[in-house]
Length: 228
Image (cartoon, rainbow, N blue to C red; front, side):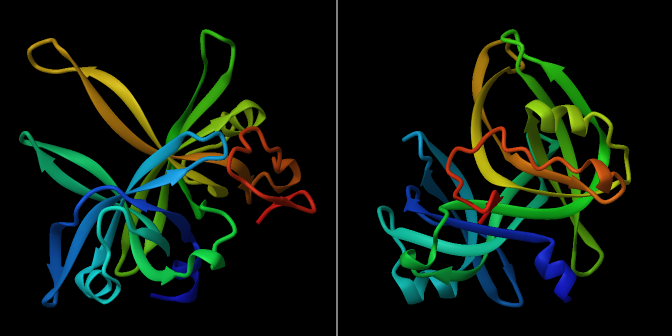
């Protein structure tokens, strides 16, 4: 993985493990496991975020339910067949464990990628502006991760002018969101979506109209007007 691919997808998380590790897959004989991490917001709400890490990291650090976990990694996507349908799955792939005192922000993500679907701009019944963005972030071996993002307020209006193929940079936090969907029997089921809640959105093409406005500052630290 080259320098650019290392730096176009960066995640810092710190929270509490809330599920037992379950086997995900193996690569060259090394097993990888999934678990969920409860990450607090400043509002006292929290997000439960899936993370994937090597069996070696689990064994060396005695990671169990209730353990604190701080990490650096990347937000990745993969396809999984569920009920005979391909479903986009999202997880934070752990590259390095950190000491809790090293982490100033418990939930921070920075991405650089390309708009791969026309952003969808809308307003809520309470007149709040929202835009849905799907970002393709390059990874090694000619792979890409497809990351759903959501922008608010002026960032949402700005996203509405972005075009497919345009390169953008975003920073924000990973959030989990519960929604309801009807199953085949017509009954409502609770589902969980994972997405990046954008605090800062920059387009290389529209550099003269870069938006650096913070609409959703929950769980972010400010220094000289910028997110750190």
